[in-house]
Image 1 (cartoon, rainbow, N blue to C red):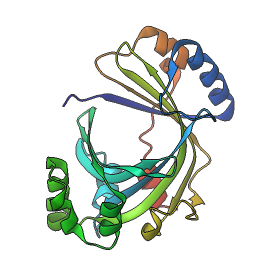
Image 2: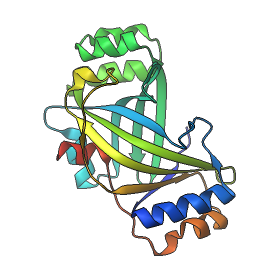
Image 3: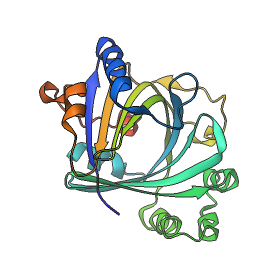
Length: 222
């Protein structure tokens, strides 16, 4: 599993409009993008009673990890368990498929269902639920516009309309009421060994100030 670089920036509405125009000239829209030009993301984050994930993020620890469940465009037929880790300056992501039945079981604290999935990530998640007392904490919804560029395996996303709910039992409910977290727009850039010059020019990242923005952390402070 190779680590990837991940850069985040705040952008305003004018920059958003300019960036999407430039990106469409050089990069390809993500293959999962719908007719609207974007897709919706819903994630359910796990943390413990001491808010381990929040505290580690705010402290800027060089090694940290988090687990979440995620699906797209309100389609619960394909749900993923994801583990996202950060080691020094690189990010790592692992995932395995779950069913809606697995998710429903997890929401009722039937964590033994993870042992039936037979993947190393599901087993690791089960062990850390038991050892670290991880529990479902917050739902985060947002809209994402995504672009890819082959050189450097670049993926660029523009995230907006970030919303949240602490009604974790409603994770599978497409009609769940969520509340706004922030009116900020977030530019994220992920790449492998290098970021091509053409992408740097399009994004104009030389003068931008990076942020350590976390959708989960900010949702916990609403």
